[in-house]
Amino acid sequence: MKLKRRLLRTFKDRVLKPQLNRQDRWEKKVVDTPGATRGAEDSPVRFNIPRQAIETEGDHPPLPGFPGSAPQIISSIINIRKSVYDLERNPANGEKRIDAKTLDELRSFARSVGADEIGYAPVPQEWVFQDTAIRYTQAIVLTMEMDQARMDLAPSPDTAVMVHETYNQLGQVSNKIADWLRQRGYAAHAGHPLGGMALYPPMAQAAGLGWRGISGLVITPQFGPRVRLAAVFTEIENLPVYEGDEHAWVLDFCESCRRCIRDCPPDAFYDHPVQHENGLVTVLDNGKCFPYFLTYHGCSVCIKVCPFNQQDFYKIKASFLDSQVDRTPVSPTAGK
Ligand code: SF4
Ligand code: SF4
Image (cartoon, rainbow, N blue to C red; front, top):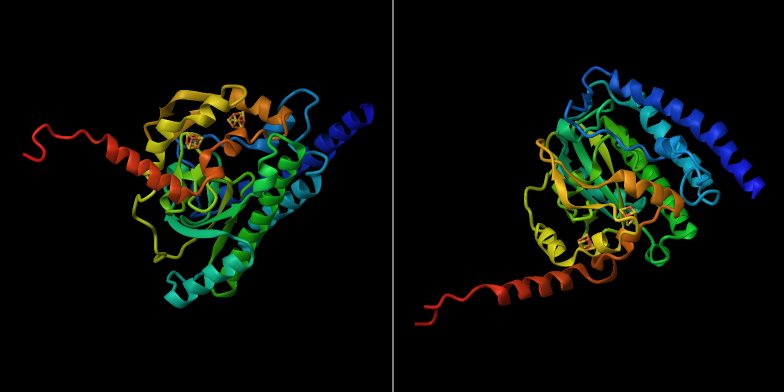
């Protein structure tokens, strides 16, 4: 026990803290870059999980899954650094247009290196966190599946390690896509899924990759909420951005479900999400979620219990929409 405590303390003080301080300096380079889009005054404040974890008192692990997750955490930090330092390799006057063939190749490349889905969305300033910045405002949004068998063990150390493996792999994918774009004359800024500089869930929704459920998680047709999100920011002006809302029914389904709210161990979800003037929504009280999250291996119960994690998205959709038709009030004069 004493040895474990010493290991936790050493990792926190000698590895995580100095790395996060360096990360703050790297990220400031982006904030100070002329032309970068900085968070607005009413943008959300970033909840930086590693930073919050080391600043929270107690003998909890420095991050969920520790020590098994330590190699993944270190690799993620290296890739966050790469995402910032590689900005110097961007062409000064990058290409601003992309043709259909290159776009097809981009999608194939993203899939070949491990992304599951890819979509496109412009990023308004309000989605960029306060005191951070993104270099470009056209996002290539990425999803990566988290392993179902290990998610179904949540909360468990194995689940937490798997989540960090996904963060790390997706961070590498984001850097690879940014490199691929640079090789073809485009400027790019890879956004890492751990400690991103802008809100990924509204980006993924805007890109048509799913819809935000009551849990705030993006429910995707392929994997429900069991995905991690990342983005590559570019200045390509003609990305085929999505403009529909075909998944909007998910939120209506959520109203009839509310399982994540009921099953959240520390009761962290608000009964009624807080609506902000800038259109953003806060669904849970971090002060309740985070201590539990840290103590119980990154929790993830809200992902595990969601019906979309267990059942086919389109079967749920068909049965839900049928049930809504059945409930449509019939006019007393119908059929006369
Ligand atoms: S991660 Fe756990 S504690 Fe946090 S909201 Fe989800 S179920 Fe609740
Ligand atoms: S558990 Fe139910 S209410 Fe929560 S996000 Fe999933 S479908 Fe929506």
